[in-house]
Length: 187
Image (cartoon, rainbow, N blue to C red; front, side, top):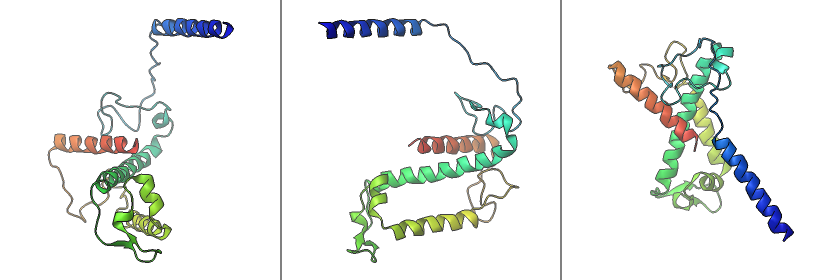
């Protein structure tokens, strides 16, 4: 009987707190009067509903580092989109042949499970070392960010990439890439 009484009291208290919190006045966060030196509403990456979202105030405190953060966000978003594509493709498609002759027993592509953690555990460490080395070499040579180009434009005119002449189409495509990268980084 004593346990039931304490459970009833706990339920009543939690209900009371919940009802008070649902009827609480809406408190809006204080709008910063600091001018965003690094980015303004309407720039690439400031899409609805968040717009310029900087809860830690990093853009106003360190605007000189913001370009590097943009470059890193784009780069990590592209890698995350490739990883999501890997998960979706390997769930439905396997290559014929061997992934590694050097492991014992030799590892076939069909023996590597789909998914991030399963494929990570199944692939030999030498295979991961090769992947990391190739990505690092490409990142620091062919796909190195030129400070004279826009963030994320890593090839310039060296590779015939798709270029958009219409500013509205280009703005839409860049925002789509940024938002898809953000979604992929969330997992």
